[in-house]
Length: 228
Image (cartoon, rainbow, N blue to C red; front, side, top):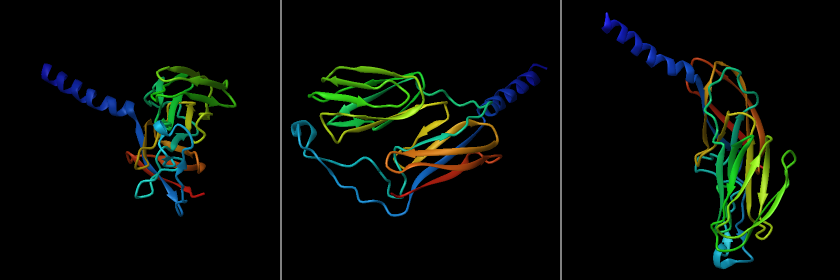
């Protein structure tokens, strides 16, 4: 009797997480067309820290054409999904006069700790449309924490070093993902249904694609972003 109950409990325990987790979309964001020629960025000041030139990071591709630092999300989240919550606090550093990482995703109401690891003065400057703007100087070692209440995509620059660019993506819901170096991403916790995927990249803009999550798990998808 006890053995039978134990087997039933184990069976329920094994199936329940699968049901709660739901399905997933696993895909790659790739460049469609010829890769544009990107020139190195000239460094005109503070070369003792910044170097003499910088590699352009506005479009970083793998050998197979996968796009790094693209953001993928669902246009409308499912009402009964079980996505893992996004980290409410993350960090963006300034290293060797570049923002690192270049793109961060934070949920609405979350915050970012802006750091400065360089032995010189930097500046944080943004002009968002939905969130309050900020323009603050930042010496080495000072952490500036900023909370972002409303969803939008925000560019962050340094007025002292004109080539520096960073991006804050404030997410409306948990179904957001940032592509890795191969252009890969995954969205989990999706019930079966039809979804509209959106992808954004700082140089290539935004695209959309319909995806159906069904019996196949994960659901594979390739998002092609036209070259510009």
